[in-house]
Length: 173
Image 1 (cartoon, helix red, strand yellow):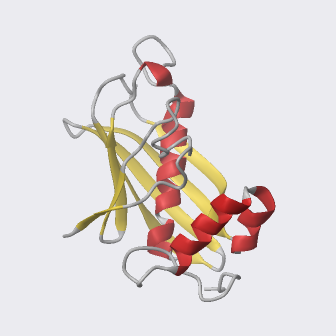
Image 2 (tube, helix red, strand yellow; image 1 turned 135 degrees about the horizontal axis):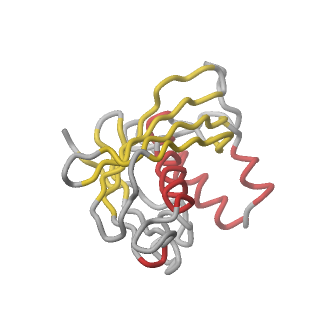
Protein backbone atom coordinates (compact mmCIF):
# COMPACT_ATOMS: atom_id res chain seq x y z
CA UNK A 1 0.00 0.00 0.00
CA UNK A 2 1.20 3.50 -0.81
CA UNK A 3 2.56 5.42 2.15
CA UNK A 4 1.98 9.14 1.85
CA UNK A 5 3.95 11.64 3.97
CA UNK A 6 1.64 14.21 5.54
CA UNK A 7 2.51 17.88 6.15
CA UNK A 8 2.94 19.15 9.72
CA UNK A 9 0.00 20.88 11.38
CA UNK A 10 2.18 24.02 11.47
CA UNK A 11 5.92 24.66 11.38
CA UNK A 12 5.98 25.24 15.15
CA UNK A 13 3.51 22.54 16.21
CA UNK A 14 4.69 20.94 19.46
CA UNK A 15 4.08 17.47 18.05
CA UNK A 16 5.06 17.59 14.38
CA UNK A 17 6.54 21.01 13.73
CA UNK A 18 9.99 20.78 12.16
CA UNK A 19 10.81 24.30 13.41
CA UNK A 20 10.09 23.53 17.08
CA UNK A 21 13.37 22.33 18.65
CA UNK A 22 11.58 21.48 21.92
CA UNK A 23 8.84 19.50 20.17
CA UNK A 24 8.49 15.85 19.23
CA UNK A 25 9.13 16.59 15.52
CA UNK A 26 7.00 13.66 14.40
CA UNK A 27 7.08 12.74 10.74
CA UNK A 28 3.72 11.22 9.93
CA UNK A 29 2.65 8.99 7.06
CA UNK A 30 -0.67 7.73 5.81
CA UNK A 31 -1.15 4.15 4.71
CA UNK A 32 -4.73 3.42 3.71
CA UNK A 33 -7.06 4.13 6.63
CA UNK A 34 -4.21 4.49 9.13
CA UNK A 35 -1.61 7.10 10.03
CA UNK A 36 1.68 6.29 11.72
CA UNK A 37 4.96 7.70 12.91
CA UNK A 38 8.27 6.06 13.74
CA UNK A 39 10.03 7.81 16.60
CA UNK A 40 12.09 7.48 19.75
CA UNK A 41 11.71 9.65 22.81
CA UNK A 42 14.92 11.37 23.96
CA UNK A 43 16.20 13.52 26.83
CA UNK A 44 13.77 16.32 25.93
CA UNK A 45 10.96 13.91 26.91
CA UNK A 46 12.41 12.36 30.09
CA UNK A 47 10.23 11.47 33.07
CA UNK A 48 11.83 8.98 35.41
CA UNK A 49 15.53 8.38 34.67
CA UNK A 50 15.86 6.64 31.31
CA UNK A 51 12.13 6.67 30.60
CA UNK A 52 9.77 8.83 28.58
CA UNK A 53 7.43 11.11 30.52
CA UNK A 54 3.82 9.97 30.33
CA UNK A 55 2.81 13.44 29.17
CA UNK A 56 5.20 13.20 26.23
CA UNK A 57 3.66 9.86 25.28
CA UNK A 58 0.17 11.39 25.52
CA UNK A 59 1.29 14.39 23.44
CA UNK A 60 2.61 12.08 20.72
CA UNK A 61 -0.71 10.22 20.64
CA UNK A 62 -2.75 13.43 20.58
CA UNK A 63 -0.69 14.88 17.76
CA UNK A 64 -0.89 11.68 15.73
CA UNK A 65 -4.66 11.63 16.24
CA UNK A 66 -4.70 15.06 14.60
CA UNK A 67 -3.47 13.38 11.43
CA UNK A 68 -6.45 11.00 11.32
CA UNK A 69 -8.35 14.06 10.12
CA UNK A 70 -6.83 13.40 6.69
CA UNK A 71 -8.84 10.17 6.78
CA UNK A 72 -11.98 11.63 8.37
CA UNK A 73 -11.76 14.56 5.94
CA UNK A 74 -12.80 17.25 8.40
CA UNK A 75 -11.22 19.66 10.85
CA UNK A 76 -11.69 18.58 14.47
CA UNK A 77 -10.31 19.15 17.97
CA UNK A 78 -9.55 16.91 20.92
CA UNK A 79 -12.41 16.44 23.37
CA UNK A 80 -10.78 13.74 25.48
CA UNK A 81 -7.75 11.51 25.42
CA UNK A 82 -6.98 8.40 27.46
CA UNK A 83 -3.64 6.61 27.42
CA UNK A 84 -3.12 3.14 28.88
CA UNK A 85 0.56 2.69 29.72
CA UNK A 86 1.27 -1.02 29.33
CA UNK A 87 5.05 -0.95 29.82
CA UNK A 88 7.67 1.68 30.65
CA UNK A 89 8.78 3.50 27.50
CA UNK A 90 12.59 3.72 27.44
CA UNK A 91 14.33 6.68 25.88
CA UNK A 92 16.02 6.08 22.51
CA UNK A 93 14.00 2.93 21.78
CA UNK A 94 12.37 2.96 18.32
CA UNK A 95 8.58 2.94 18.41
CA UNK A 96 5.89 2.86 15.79
CA UNK A 97 2.72 4.64 16.79
CA UNK A 98 -0.32 3.89 14.62
CA UNK A 99 -3.73 5.56 14.73
CA UNK A 100 -7.05 5.16 12.97
CA UNK A 101 -10.68 6.27 13.12
CA UNK A 102 -12.71 3.56 14.86
CA UNK A 103 -16.11 5.16 14.48
CA UNK A 104 -17.84 8.35 13.41
CA UNK A 105 -20.91 9.28 15.47
CA UNK A 106 -22.37 12.61 14.38
CA UNK A 107 -19.66 15.19 15.09
CA UNK A 108 -17.71 12.73 17.27
CA UNK A 109 -14.69 10.92 15.86
CA UNK A 110 -13.68 7.92 18.00
CA UNK A 111 -9.96 7.28 17.52
CA UNK A 112 -7.53 4.56 18.62
CA UNK A 113 -3.73 4.35 18.65
CA UNK A 114 -1.09 1.82 19.65
CA UNK A 115 2.59 2.32 20.41
CA UNK A 116 4.72 -0.73 19.62
CA UNK A 117 8.44 -1.22 20.23
CA UNK A 118 10.74 -2.55 17.52
CA UNK A 119 10.57 -6.04 19.08
CA UNK A 120 6.74 -6.09 18.81
CA UNK A 121 6.02 -5.23 22.46
CA UNK A 122 2.91 -3.09 22.79
CA UNK A 123 4.00 -0.24 25.07
CA UNK A 124 0.79 1.81 25.23
CA UNK A 125 -2.63 2.26 23.70
CA UNK A 126 -4.67 5.43 23.45
CA UNK A 127 -8.22 6.35 22.68
CA UNK A 128 -9.66 9.76 21.97
CA UNK A 129 -12.80 11.53 20.95
CA UNK A 130 -12.35 14.45 18.59
CA UNK A 131 -15.20 16.84 17.77
CA UNK A 132 -15.56 18.21 14.25
CA UNK A 133 -15.48 21.99 14.04
CA UNK A 134 -15.80 24.63 11.36
CA UNK A 135 -12.69 26.35 10.06
CA UNK A 136 -13.88 29.49 11.87
CA UNK A 137 -12.96 27.75 15.14
CA UNK A 138 -9.30 28.10 14.17
CA UNK A 139 -9.76 31.64 12.88
CA UNK A 140 -11.04 32.71 16.32
CA UNK A 141 -8.00 31.26 18.07
CA UNK A 142 -5.10 31.45 15.62
CA UNK A 143 -3.01 33.85 13.62
CA UNK A 144 -4.75 34.80 10.34
CA UNK A 145 -1.81 33.59 8.22
CA UNK A 146 -1.76 30.19 9.90
CA UNK A 147 -5.53 29.85 9.56
CA UNK A 148 -5.35 30.71 5.86
CA UNK A 149 -2.59 28.11 5.41
CA UNK A 150 -4.79 25.47 7.09
CA UNK A 151 -7.83 26.50 5.04
CA UNK A 152 -5.80 26.31 1.82
CA UNK A 153 -4.61 22.79 2.72
CA UNK A 154 -8.11 21.64 3.63
CA UNK A 155 -9.77 23.01 0.52
CA UNK A 156 -7.08 22.10 -2.02
CA UNK A 157 -7.29 18.35 -1.45
CA UNK A 158 -8.02 16.28 -4.52
CA UNK A 159 -9.98 13.74 -2.50
CA UNK A 160 -7.24 11.24 -1.75
CA UNK A 161 -4.58 13.08 0.18
CA UNK A 162 -6.31 15.03 2.88
CA UNK A 163 -9.35 16.51 4.49
CA UNK A 164 -11.44 18.91 2.52
CA UNK A 165 -14.44 21.05 3.21
CA UNK A 166 -17.13 22.00 0.76
CA UNK A 167 -18.75 24.14 3.43
CA UNK A 168 -17.38 25.74 6.58
CA UNK A 169 -19.57 23.55 8.81
CA UNK A 170 -18.97 19.84 9.34
CA UNK A 171 -21.74 17.51 8.23
CA UNK A 172 -23.58 15.42 10.77
CA UNK A 173 -22.80 11.83 9.96
